[in-house]
Length: 189
Image (cartoon, rainbow, N blue to C red):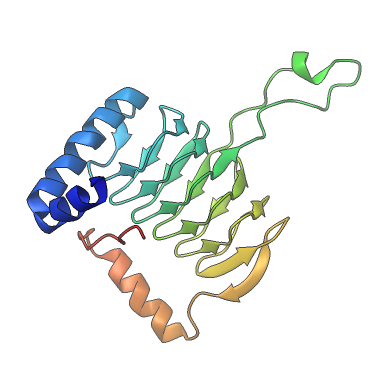
Protein backbone atom coordinates (compact mmCIF):
# COMPACT_ATOMS: atom_id res chain seq x y z
CA UNK A 1 0.00 0.00 0.00
CA UNK A 2 2.68 2.51 1.04
CA UNK A 3 4.88 1.46 -1.91
CA UNK A 4 1.98 2.15 -4.30
CA UNK A 5 1.47 5.60 -2.80
CA UNK A 6 5.18 6.36 -3.07
CA UNK A 7 5.21 5.25 -6.71
CA UNK A 8 2.23 7.46 -7.57
CA UNK A 9 3.85 10.39 -5.72
CA UNK A 10 7.01 9.96 -7.83
CA UNK A 11 4.85 10.01 -10.94
CA UNK A 12 3.57 13.38 -9.77
CA UNK A 13 7.09 14.87 -9.61
CA UNK A 14 5.97 18.13 -8.07
CA UNK A 15 4.44 16.28 -5.09
CA UNK A 16 7.63 14.30 -4.62
CA UNK A 17 9.80 17.44 -4.88
CA UNK A 18 7.60 19.35 -2.43
CA UNK A 19 7.70 16.46 0.06
CA UNK A 20 11.50 16.24 -0.27
CA UNK A 21 11.92 20.01 0.19
CA UNK A 22 9.70 20.16 3.29
CA UNK A 23 11.32 17.07 4.82
CA UNK A 24 14.81 18.52 4.37
CA UNK A 25 13.78 21.90 5.80
CA UNK A 26 12.62 20.02 8.89
CA UNK A 27 15.80 17.89 9.09
CA UNK A 28 18.10 20.90 8.61
CA UNK A 29 16.37 22.60 11.54
CA UNK A 30 16.36 19.41 13.64
CA UNK A 31 20.11 18.83 13.18
CA UNK A 32 20.96 22.56 13.42
CA UNK A 33 22.55 22.56 9.95
CA UNK A 34 23.14 26.15 8.88
CA UNK A 35 25.89 25.62 6.31
CA UNK A 36 24.30 23.18 3.87
CA UNK A 37 22.95 23.85 0.39
CA UNK A 38 19.14 23.74 0.04
CA UNK A 39 19.47 20.66 -2.21
CA UNK A 40 21.50 18.69 0.39
CA UNK A 41 19.57 15.60 1.54
CA UNK A 42 19.65 13.29 4.57
CA UNK A 43 18.11 9.88 3.89
CA UNK A 44 17.09 9.09 7.47
CA UNK A 45 18.23 9.18 11.09
CA UNK A 46 21.91 10.06 11.44
CA UNK A 47 24.30 11.73 13.92
CA UNK A 48 25.62 14.87 12.26
CA UNK A 49 27.68 17.67 13.83
CA UNK A 50 25.95 21.04 13.34
CA UNK A 51 29.03 22.60 11.69
CA UNK A 52 28.73 20.31 8.64
CA UNK A 53 29.29 22.11 5.34
CA UNK A 54 27.59 20.47 2.38
CA UNK A 55 27.35 21.67 -1.20
CA UNK A 56 24.65 21.11 -3.84
CA UNK A 57 23.03 17.68 -4.22
CA UNK A 58 25.20 15.99 -1.59
CA UNK A 59 23.59 13.10 0.27
CA UNK A 60 23.99 11.41 3.65
CA UNK A 61 22.27 8.02 4.09
CA UNK A 62 20.70 6.56 7.19
CA UNK A 63 22.89 5.67 10.15
CA UNK A 64 25.85 7.91 9.31
CA UNK A 65 27.97 9.49 12.04
CA UNK A 66 29.56 12.71 10.84
CA UNK A 67 31.80 14.40 13.38
CA UNK A 68 32.82 18.07 13.53
CA UNK A 69 34.91 19.79 10.87
CA UNK A 70 33.55 17.96 7.81
CA UNK A 71 32.98 19.54 4.38
CA UNK A 72 31.18 17.78 1.52
CA UNK A 73 31.49 18.95 -2.08
CA UNK A 74 28.69 18.86 -4.61
CA UNK A 75 27.18 15.51 -5.63
CA UNK A 76 28.87 13.67 -2.72
CA UNK A 77 27.19 10.44 -1.57
CA UNK A 78 27.74 8.87 1.85
CA UNK A 79 26.26 5.36 1.97
CA UNK A 80 24.53 3.90 5.04
CA UNK A 81 26.52 3.75 8.29
CA UNK A 82 29.48 5.83 7.08
CA UNK A 83 31.47 7.23 10.01
CA UNK A 84 33.75 10.27 9.82
CA UNK A 85 35.42 10.55 13.18
CA UNK A 86 38.52 10.07 15.26
CA UNK A 87 41.64 12.04 16.03
CA UNK A 88 39.82 13.68 18.91
CA UNK A 89 41.76 12.37 21.95
CA UNK A 90 45.34 12.87 23.06
CA UNK A 91 47.16 9.63 23.83
CA UNK A 92 50.75 10.87 23.92
CA UNK A 93 50.97 12.15 27.51
CA UNK A 94 52.86 9.67 29.71
CA UNK A 95 51.44 9.23 33.20
CA UNK A 96 47.98 10.51 32.23
CA UNK A 97 45.01 8.36 31.19
CA UNK A 98 43.67 9.11 27.71
CA UNK A 99 40.32 10.17 29.13
CA UNK A 100 42.04 13.05 30.99
CA UNK A 101 44.61 13.96 28.31
CA UNK A 102 42.50 16.51 26.45
CA UNK A 103 41.89 16.92 22.76
CA UNK A 104 44.26 18.02 19.98
CA UNK A 105 43.35 20.75 17.52
CA UNK A 106 40.46 19.66 15.30
CA UNK A 107 41.50 18.39 11.87
CA UNK A 108 39.25 19.35 8.96
CA UNK A 109 37.96 16.54 6.75
CA UNK A 110 37.22 17.26 3.08
CA UNK A 111 35.22 15.04 0.77
CA UNK A 112 35.46 16.65 -2.64
CA UNK A 113 32.91 16.85 -5.48
CA UNK A 114 31.26 13.65 -6.75
CA UNK A 115 32.96 11.31 -4.26
CA UNK A 116 31.08 8.18 -3.18
CA UNK A 117 31.68 6.42 0.14
CA UNK A 118 30.03 3.00 0.28
CA UNK A 119 28.28 1.18 3.10
CA UNK A 120 30.04 1.13 6.49
CA UNK A 121 33.10 3.14 5.44
CA UNK A 122 35.11 4.72 8.26
CA UNK A 123 37.09 7.91 7.55
CA UNK A 124 39.58 9.10 10.15
CA UNK A 125 39.23 12.85 10.74
CA UNK A 126 41.65 14.97 8.74
CA UNK A 127 41.61 12.84 5.59
CA UNK A 128 40.82 14.31 2.18
CA UNK A 129 38.83 12.23 -0.27
CA UNK A 130 39.65 13.54 -3.74
CA UNK A 131 37.28 14.70 -6.44
CA UNK A 132 35.40 11.81 -8.01
CA UNK A 133 36.97 9.17 -5.74
CA UNK A 134 35.11 6.04 -4.69
CA UNK A 135 35.65 4.22 -1.39
CA UNK A 136 34.45 0.60 -1.31
CA UNK A 137 32.10 -0.72 1.35
CA UNK A 138 33.73 -1.51 4.69
CA UNK A 139 36.97 0.36 3.98
CA UNK A 140 38.87 2.32 6.61
CA UNK A 141 40.37 5.54 5.25
CA UNK A 142 43.42 6.60 7.26
CA UNK A 143 45.07 8.95 4.73
CA UNK A 144 44.20 11.11 1.73
CA UNK A 145 42.72 9.50 -1.38
CA UNK A 146 43.67 11.08 -4.74
CA UNK A 147 41.02 12.19 -7.24
CA UNK A 148 39.28 9.61 -9.43
CA UNK A 149 40.71 6.56 -7.69
CA UNK A 150 38.79 3.61 -6.24
CA UNK A 151 40.04 2.50 -2.82
CA UNK A 152 39.03 -0.38 -0.58
CA UNK A 153 40.20 -2.52 2.33
CA UNK A 154 41.54 -1.98 5.83
CA UNK A 155 43.42 0.30 5.64
CA UNK A 156 42.08 1.59 2.31
CA UNK A 157 44.41 1.08 -0.66
CA UNK A 158 44.03 1.81 -4.36
CA UNK A 159 42.25 -0.96 -6.23
CA UNK A 160 41.41 0.79 -9.52
CA UNK A 161 41.08 4.05 -11.42
CA UNK A 162 37.54 5.37 -11.89
CA UNK A 163 38.10 6.28 -15.54
CA UNK A 164 40.26 4.41 -18.01
CA UNK A 165 41.46 7.43 -20.02
CA UNK A 166 42.58 11.00 -19.33
CA UNK A 167 39.97 12.18 -21.85
CA UNK A 168 37.15 10.66 -19.76
CA UNK A 169 38.55 12.26 -16.63
CA UNK A 170 38.81 15.67 -18.33
CA UNK A 171 35.23 15.36 -19.61
CA UNK A 172 34.03 14.61 -16.07
CA UNK A 173 36.07 17.52 -14.67
CA UNK A 174 34.44 19.89 -17.18
CA UNK A 175 30.99 18.75 -16.03
CA UNK A 176 31.91 19.21 -12.36
CA UNK A 177 33.23 22.72 -13.08
CA UNK A 178 29.80 23.79 -14.38
CA UNK A 179 27.17 25.13 -11.96
CA UNK A 180 25.32 22.26 -10.21
CA UNK A 181 22.38 20.81 -12.14
CA UNK A 182 19.46 18.77 -10.93
CA UNK A 183 19.15 15.26 -12.34
CA UNK A 184 17.01 12.20 -11.71
CA UNK A 185 17.83 10.46 -8.45
CA UNK A 186 18.44 6.71 -8.33
CA UNK A 187 15.29 4.87 -7.31
CA UNK A 188 15.38 2.53 -4.33
CA UNK A 189 14.85 -1.11 -5.18
